[in-house]
Image (cartoon, rainbow, N blue to C red; front, side):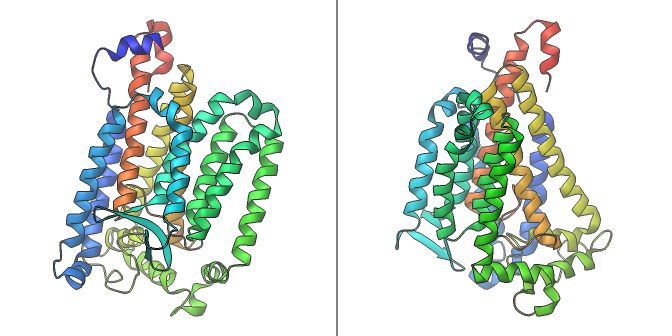
Length: 391
């Protein structure tokens, strides 16, 4: 910490050029595709074809502004406030369920309206979950590795958060926060036997939640054979698959897609990847998959550098963010390609949405902060030691 304090006086922020390039590429491609998939909707809703592109540019701008504040906040501040932030997240999950305060869209009450902008509370909870779990495993690493109680203790809070999320309902976000928590626990050294037991319990509970909720069961059955009921339960997936089929190798051309024209629901949000497939083809699909793969790789690379530098909390922050980015993008793309049941999860840094975009920008900014502090430590170590911390 003395090294870090001394280095911080230099006042220079160390950016990761590779991470900047990856994130800017995702933002740019996402913005172009959101514009392409929403021009007709803007005309229908507000008689302004650029309604959604303008709002998305505002979302990105606010996200970058908030992200700047996150990047300038020392990691030690996040470490001290992690438990309180998660409690704030739980309070917000309660508030969003209060009639008159939460905003209901498509049958789900997941949003709070602040200053005319909808904030999806579950996105904030994911962000807080990463910080909380990173702090927990840093403080209780020995207990996690040796005791069952150390493994199950944080899941009491996560179970409460999941119950609140399921009440909205938001099954997808509940799964994401559990995957984040379990992933960080596993990387912190939880015993494999205990981890398998915990995973089995979570899997059984998830299966029961699907089995005894008719709309979730319909999603699973329609995912297995969407063509059996192509005009109802399989409608979204059928048109998503048609988008992929029409795109072939190089796509039908930017702006020339047909499925986004009132055939494919939520084309600019949850099913943006299908629009990319239709208009940019396999080339566009592989480009986006490659960018997300690079993002996850870079995130874990920074995490490993932080761990070698002795910054355990920073390392688990990076690992948690990598799990979040990787899992959520995998689920979104898997749903679009028909390999996973339909879930309402956005494509990080790409899909339309104010809350999602701003929180994702903050998450990336937190990763930049980790990289900055590790680089500062590296700069003040002897050459024979610093080479192991290169990121």
